[in-house]
Image (cartoon, rainbow, N blue to C red; front, side, top):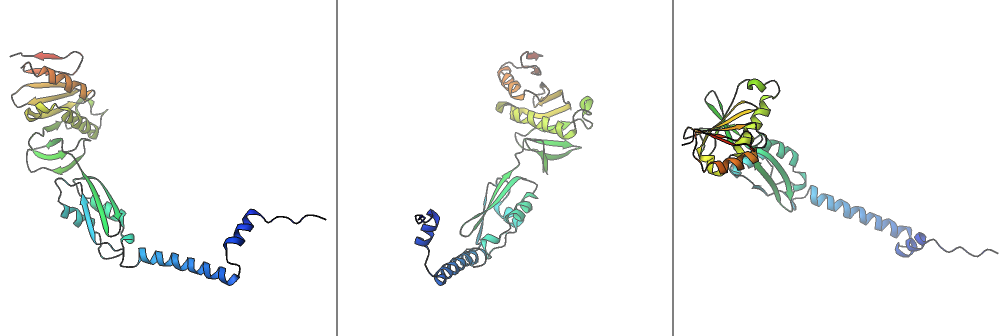
Length: 250
């Protein structure tokens, strides 16, 4: 005669934890469904967790109101139903915005985090000045010169290197040089002239010139130039930073 089999581990605990009658089990299931439905209604449809304010952070030249108007976030409805992706696309249309992130902050806030383009140079196109960021992106027309911000002039056809380097890449290179200019020389740097990829020059307010060469190794060239500035000269050549040269010594 075989011994009776012990109940399985799972079956044992199911019988211990669940109500014995079918009616009780159905009642427990219905309560769970009702609870889940209530939670969905509370978050997605009720006015309890509604959108009441738009918080804007990260602005510098833009105003918070400009960002709010661009985001067009509807207030008063459920926070869960705010279309954050649509708000991001709308704010990204502002020319001064480099990146944007829109998120929900429970229980009542829509948060808009903005990163603005950083102006490192002004592109001169036939006397029209436009702001350029550190990546060479032209993003905004400037009303006029900006203190400590050099003007960039790029050869219309890219010069001898035009075929190898598209204009966007030349602009990125010019912006890299403008960003690398030593702090003590920023106010004195009037023009960053790029006649070709390998021929970048800084024109200073006192008439002297820095021969920069290509945008490559700009950080090292800036370090060398900083040391050279102790010796007044008409020409500072850092195109080969390992072999710097001074010309027209005063």
